[in-house]
Length: 205
Image 1 (cartoon, helix red, strand yellow):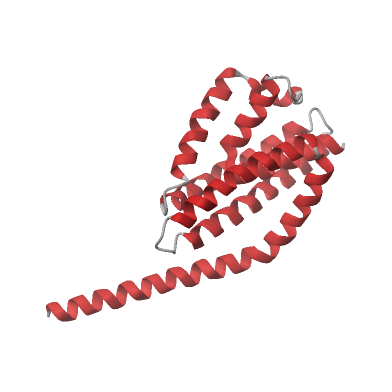
Image 2 (cartoon, rainbow, N blue to C red; image 1 turned 180 degrees about the horizontal axis):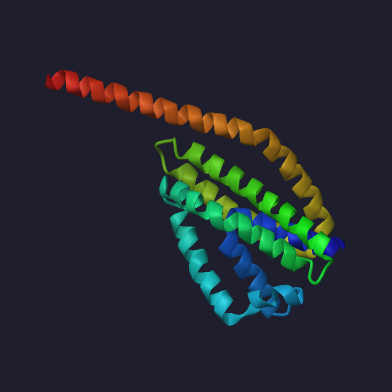
């Protein structure tokens, strides 16, 4: 069960960060015969799925480099990445016991949600900075992280699962702090805007 477990976890985790890149990479590797996905995920190797995933990957790559718009993109994909992570995790187990598949769906959705929230929270906090460089650097690092992470899940499952445990520990510590940081940042922006508006209105009067 080690390899299917690593595949399920890798696909769910990757979906939370870069869904389309994850689907594209898994489909291309299976299509090329480098890896062999379970029959339940054979659709990922379809030329139509690979083509659609490639287009969406490029779209997400560009959208994710635009400050503020990437947060809107993340907000919309909250309703896409998490269910997709659950579906891919179930598919990675093949024709398993229904109880096990149910657990896989719950765990996959939770893992995708954790990765998604960590990504969205980090990017929202970065977007509070006026300069765009950190956004582009972070986005590019996320692209590379997904590629490396999925390759580890496919070819070095033990190492990937150990690193995944570390990620979950770090995420459990960071998420509350990210949330408080984003809240404080937006409150500061709102206060600044109200103060500036009052100042302009006073000059006008």
